[in-house]
Length: 447
Image 1 (cartoon, helix red, strand yellow):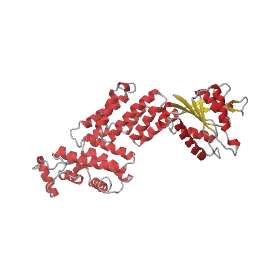
Image 2 (cartoon, helix red, strand yellow; image 1 turned 60 degrees about the vertical axis):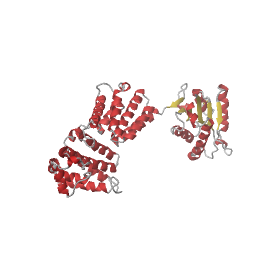
Image 3 (cartoon, rainbow, N blue to C red; image 1 turned 90 degrees about the horizontal axis):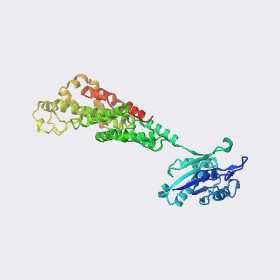
Image 4 (cartoon, rainbow, N blue to C red; image 1 turned 120 degrees about the horizontal axis):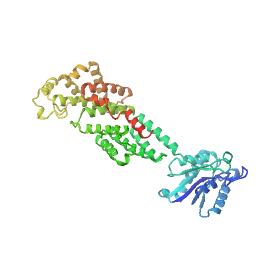
């Protein structure tokens, strides 16, 4: 793999004569450190102002270094600028020159065949900044950054050439993005930040843990999409993978939390009813909370409506033997419950019972928790949110769902769901995917 140096050229190249005794300039110092096979130099050319012209300096660098290392190939790309401190002028020409460099090396496909280094200490302050910023763009992958310290600030005899290690900065940025994404319960952002952390973390242990967390948050993304089987399979595989055991110790708090998540997903998968169950309705409540954290207010209203409709459907099936999605089933004909509803509605029920009629059915059948515990005021709020849903893109209209609309859904669902279906209460109280638990898992793995 060929070693390639990219460098601006300043007045202190090849030697800094401003100190006594003169010292090597930044380009020669870095060449001595990395021994490049190719060096691309970017001097400034200004025939009208020789003070801004560093082409001769670049040629002197080439002659000085090739005398030591004749195998190094130098190429000069002069920048014709009127002001070597103008960011816009410099950046425009530098980008064009980088295109020429990449082409000279064989195109983008050949970049991985070279080890790139960039000098961040030659030229004007603006040039140094442009070089450093360019290195962080990722346009040339895995480029290494170098600084040559001013001899006035370094004790004599100490190496002035140091590599600028940015992994610590990038690692901290990843941790900040993880925490920011987690506060919004946006698991896509958290997964992306964990994936980046796995590549840049200084510690091998942290890189390995970040890789595991990337997979864990992939499970949480699937949970958000109600893909319970996908989420279960991921957590099961993590817990059974021998390579994970070093970071998820046996009987540790971390392992117990992940096992609880896996086992509760399995309980949802084993629920006897394919459509609604106390477990998936309770999970949908927390799914709604996560949507609110992401400011996805239409999703909040959609989930609220599904929770309420699903709760009514579950009760009609389990308490009264009616399948609201299949009212034409001959098994329903002749039952007292169906006759009661048809008499009250004034028509023969075909197909399915719609959302609005489902709650009316609970009242007509005198379902005790609904009749005794859901007040007229709460029923009016339910009806108001149902009408709001119908006017938005969640159902039949284009009206937007506001934060205020979404805020009404959360406490209402949390109160009504365990009232109508007491079996939801335990799962709501012991839900294994709360923000607090996921933060704890993150802290145990990384922080």
